[in-house]
Length: 274
Image (cartoon, rainbow, N blue to C red; front, side):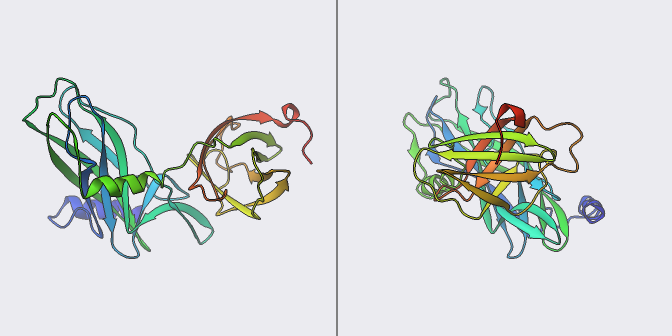
């Protein structure tokens, strides 16, 4: 934190690069946008080799990327979509990071009254933490000009690349049933597959906050018929009894990750755990 603070003072007091070891730009899935037709807008971030930024919950340290969009009147933008990050264990700490390149996307909907033949500008103030052995705060003001046409036209460059990024988003667990409950000082996650499943020895879970479970690179798995059980110690930073388990489960087959948001029940409501 001290390094980040000193770096902030250095950046604010000089004309040096405000996004060292990294760069950001806005990209669009459409080169021409159509009134009333949604399209994907992305903040593309590139990072020097060995440097990284952070997921929406950074883990034991770090800071998530923040994007403050400025859109024309009546244009709407949805929530930010975060690709699956890399789990980064180091010196007993666990963080969730992006290396090399990441595109953080949100769905933009133009109003039906957008005037064909005009060009609009979308801008954003982006801030992030860029880290190697030490960390430096970074910021950049980015913008993109988009012409409005009677018919939308996909971007030759960015539409396919952004479609590939969407495959890196966590999925809804359609073929699974999950439940979570507290057993003493542990949160227990149970998964039951609708088909045959041979569980691995370890699974990873990336929570969306630091107040539920103790962060670890992976957790031991107990096999169940067509499913599994994993125990995750309750976070030492939990100030109140955890009530929900929200995050991404990794390591279940070929899926990029399952998005979970589960109510945490008491063990007595779930029956005896073997």
